[in-house]
Every structure is written in structure tokens, then in C-alpha cells.
Length: 234
Image 1: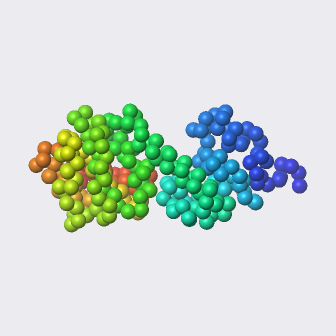
Image 2: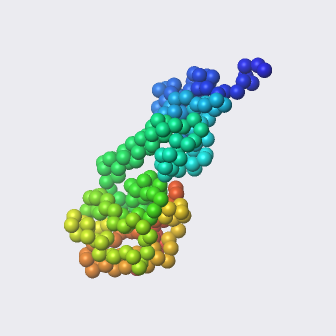
Image 3: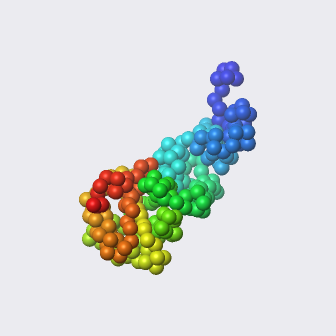
């Protein structure tokens, strides 16, 4: 077997310009594929797989980065080549990314569209295993004042007390808000209950003089604006 036919099992078997760490130094992290970024965290592979290939396997098995975020730590630890230390490194890196998204108010403080609202919360909420309902409180210029979690559990018209949604808005004297909740199934298609809840929230907002700008449903890589679909808004 000649050298070109040898299987590549180690990062050091790759040409220097193909090694993830060297590529990051030369081109920046944005140029690397997710599997290469994982390889830098993992550092070494396992017999038969280099670190990049291990990263590719993890992304495939867990359904991408969001799947790795949702996966319990022990489930990661049980993967071939991933012990507690490497699993912790992966979880820590993903959590840093999540916190960075929340710590950039200068980049996401103004909500001008449903896409802006989705960008603010979708990264985290798409990974939640239960339904969470939150409100994004806004000032008169649609700048974010606060994001408040109101419910954890099934979002339906029989369980939600609409007054709870406006409690934080009244406390912060917020003139407007956006309601957002996730569908753990990954499908953001609004249900009849979602539309019913929206109607009740919009009506209460009119009575309380708080403008309900939208109700967003977050799924896996997708989101839906009930206002854009004309559900619950008149």
C-alpha cells in the first residue's frame, strides 16, 4: 500500500494546512467546520478515527450542535472516545456560545422584526426539552428591557393565566412585549391552543395598554410568527 492510500487516523497524519488548529490560526475560527472545531476541543481521536472524524460522528449521532447541547452529559460520556473530561469540554464550549449570545445587548437590543426576536432566543430555546413560555419586554423604541420566563410546561389556554404574562411588563413599565415559546418536537407549526392563547394575550394587552407585538414559536432551526400568519391578532 502506498502512502496516499493509507487511512488517516490521526490529526498528525493530515497535511499541516489541513489540521484544524493550524487552519484556525491561519483563517480564523469562522472558516472551520463544526467537526473541526470539535476536533480542537477533543485534541485526539480513537483507534480508527482521528479527532475530526470523531467530531463528525458526534454531530451525526446527536443531530448537530443543538443536539449536543440538549444531550445529557452522561450520554456524551458514553460515546466511544468521549470520557467525562471531553464531554465537559464540549458542554462548556457550547454554554459559552449560549451566554455570548445573551451578553451582546449592543448587537441585539432593538427588535425590528420577528427575525430579530427569534435570533435573540432561538439558540437556547430550540434545545429545551420542555415547553417554556417567555416574554421579551420592550421600551418605546423596541429596545429589550428584559426577557422573563413565565411558564415551564404545556402552553395551552386552559393552564395559562394571562395576568402572569403581564406582571413583569407592569413591574418594568414596559409599553410592549413579545411572547415566545418553544415546541420541543422541533416543529414550530402553531397549534389551535397557541392561537387561542395568543387571542387572550392580545385582548388583555389592549385592556392593560401593553402592546403585544407578536407571539413566536421556536422549533429546530425554524420559527413561526403568529402575527405574520394572522393567528390570534385582529
